[in-house]
Length: 174
View 1 (cartoon, rainbow, N blue to C red):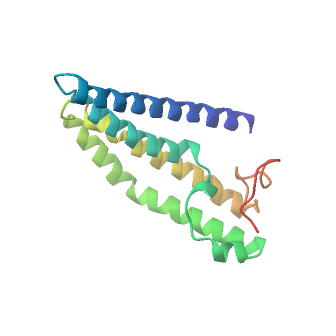
View 2 (cartoon, rainbow, N blue to C red; view 1 turned 135 degrees about the vertical axis):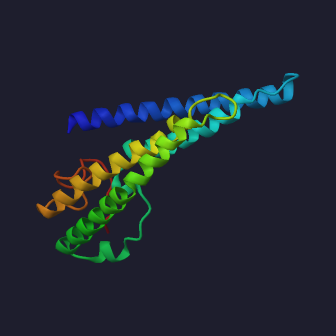
């Protein structure tokens, strides 16, 4: 678990770096628009690309299952065994949906390698490849969760296969 926690912190470091570069680029864009005699075109494109990467990077590596928005009133009102069943069914559904879309996602990303961004001339396949990374991580994460639920794991654990939350963390259970 220490390795996973360490990797999570490094992923958060990457997210912070992307957000810092996005903010600095945004400030440069404002400065160029109002104080320089010419606009800088690449700043908007870089901000949009980094924002896309930031959203999917954090979704893949920085968020826990409990951080996602969900309708869990019935889930939270259920006993442990039923919550485990709900968690397993939901995990299998997520894995199935992402696997079903994986070929089309690959095809989409691969197709966009022939086109380039308007200003920075970056192949758009690189821009959209973060969704492929997100897809793979979601399949791995929810496959592990499904197996953990089938083996009797705690559906409220932060990491599948480990008991509940680590000491000092709040729980979403009543």
